[in-house]
Structure formats: structure tokens, C-alpha cells
Image (cartoon, rainbow, N blue to C red):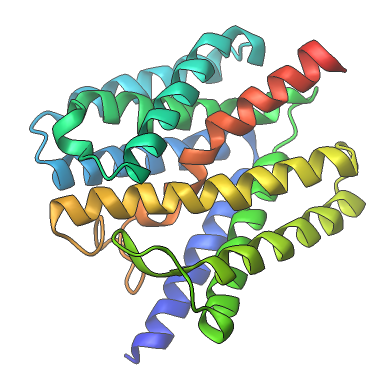
Length: 268
């Protein structure tokens, strides 16, 4: 099969499955993202040669089951979101200082704070509205896809200045700016359809997605570069692994979660 066609079909199945399961019911939402979490843990463990991935797969599954059975208020996860937020700041610092992730951090800290807990926070994002609003998660994915698409198109057409060449040679500052602008536009459009958030809230969400989602992609690229691999897995023909598709969303989720906490519980 033609590589482009394979990539297109694989991507379409992924998007359709994600959107359907997220919007169909709370059960399907929890199931699909728990599966994504388990696959991401497995792929990352293989990437970093961690020998006991099933410990974190089991722990993550139990946490997902617990928050499904007894959905907590988002504010109850304040300290967890702060922990993930601070850990991601450390990853950003070491990314731009060109420090090794695998040498300066234990693998289990990556598995817990970089992958497992951000997935749990993602499961709780709909709970910022009552009743739970699962379109919040869909909107974040739309913004990420918009950023990725237009960063690629603008970068390919006008990109000249490398963003962080030693980690991702193809990313450019022009592409980053293009992705940012179109993602902000997408945030405005989303605000007209999903009115449970104000346009200001959507714009700030879009800004976080475009800026930090790009950094999240660079972080995973550095992990893969240190591991000497191109993709985290091969479960999605033409796209690589699940972690390759979700690196931006799991990285940006703690920042969005903490921002929503501040906005809904301490500002509004």
C-alpha cells in the first residue's frame, strides 16, 4: 500500500476512535485513555530499557479506575498537578541546557511524573465543568492538531531559522509562529461552538497548547534521540507509536490543569 495512503488511513482511524470514545460515554472515554496510557508506558519503558513497565501499567490502571469510580474534584489533585508542572519545568530546563534526560533522571520518575500522572490529570479535565464536559479534551486535541499541521505547513514553506536543531532539525521558528497564530485562530473558532468557556479562556488554552505542546514534542524527540530510535513504537503505520501521537498532550496537560485550577478555584 502507498505510504501516504497508509499514513492517512492510520491517522483517520486514530482520530475517529479518539473522538468517538471521548464523546460516546464516560466509560469509553476512560477506557480509551487508560489504554493509551498503558501503551505509552510500555513504549517509553522499551525506549529507556526499563525492565518493569507492568508495575506502572498496573499502578496507572488502578489510579484511572479509582478516579472513575469516585470522581474527585479537580482541586483535590492540586499537589499532583504542581508536581507534574515542576517536573516538566525541569525537563524544559535540561532540554535547553542540553543535559541528558536519561543520565540526570531516574526512569521511574519519567514514567510516573512525565507519563502516568499527566494521563490521570487528562482524565480529570472534563470535571472542571459540572456535569463533566468531555468536549474540553476534544478541543485540546483539535488545538494540538491545528498547531502541528500549520507549524509543518508554514515551516515547510517559509521556515529558515531552526528552533532547536540538535533535537529536531526540521522544526523552525517560522513554523512555530505560524502554528501559534493558527492555533489562536482555532481557539476563537472553538469559542463560538463550545460556549461553556469564554473566548479568553479558550485563547489562553490555545496559547498554552501551541507553545508548550511544541516543547513537549521536542522533549520526546530528545528522549528518542538519546535512545537512538526514530519512533516510540510501530502500532500506528506511518505514524509510529502512541507516545509519538500523544507527547504534546501529556506534556501540556499539567500546565492546562494548573491554569484551570487557578482560574476556576482562585480567580473566578
